[in-house]
Amino acid sequence: MLIGVNWFVELVAGKYNGSGFEIHAQSNSFMTQHPYQYIYGPVASWRLGCSLGIDPLSTAQKTCSFDCVYCQAGRTKVLTLERKVFVPTEALLEEVRRVPSEPFDVVTFAGNGEPTLALNLGDMIRGIRTVRSERIVVITNGSLIWRPDVRDDLALADLVMAKLDAGSPDSLKTVNHPAEGLDFEEICEGLRVFRKNYPGKLALQIMFVASNKKLAADIANRAQTIHPDEIEVNTPLRACAVRPLTAEEMVPITDLFRKTFARIPVKSVYEEERKKSQPYCRQSTDRRRGQELV
Picture 1 (cartoon, rainbow, N blue to C red):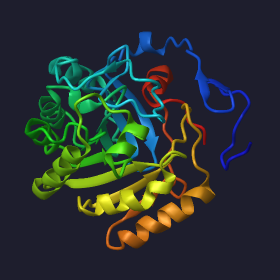
Picture 2 (picture 1 turned 90 degrees about the vertical axis):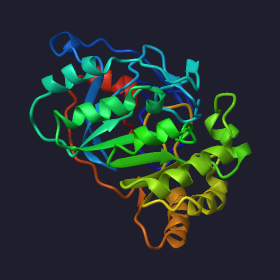
Picture 3 (picture 1 turned 45 degrees about the vertical axis):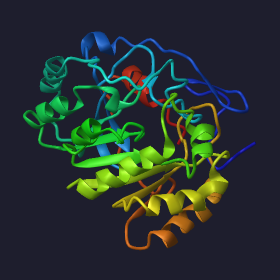
């Protein structure tokens, strides 16, 4: 069934099986020429422009506090709330120093898992500021933002993009499959506290799929209590286990958020243009971001 994006029977990265994509590994010798372990991209982001990606976990297995149904990185192999040092700060900075001097729009912490699980996230942000001049962004699922130490680390970034795919504890479990011990109300309160004290820009990123599209009003009401600077309405346009919503399905959702948040920007994935970019290593980038479908 065609659903508003160009589906191909076979993609470079995998095959569509009717309900999702089977992703197949590809060999690439580029990493032997440019041995970046912790850096990926640059990528063309519909929200951020040309972004140099930083993966502060860089684990072989996806390590996260959520196991979201739509994640382009696949199933979470290590579901955890434990913060620890995955990548030594100086090792990351050594790679950043070797990146070509071409300017990017932003440097973004994201990657193959939840970046706030990195205990030295704050040190990494401080270090990158000494070698790069771009704005620093952290894309987080927000699950640990109830912790003061996590809020302190995130406050060092210029822009924080936090996930809010649910409007209740039940929908959090349905869409995000959180690690045991996470509390929805505690997460929301953490977002409110962070917004109140954060001098930078807070965007709420909301991913809509079939299982939560009818909850748009509940999510919008919950988002109102957080007072974000921007709303980003999204649906998964990279290969994953669930289908994206069509452009037509996204229209009423986007309209609802624009009506609810009339005084702040509301961006929608189907409306935004992307800059073109050439990753230093396609394989490394696709492992963290998945294959683009459009």
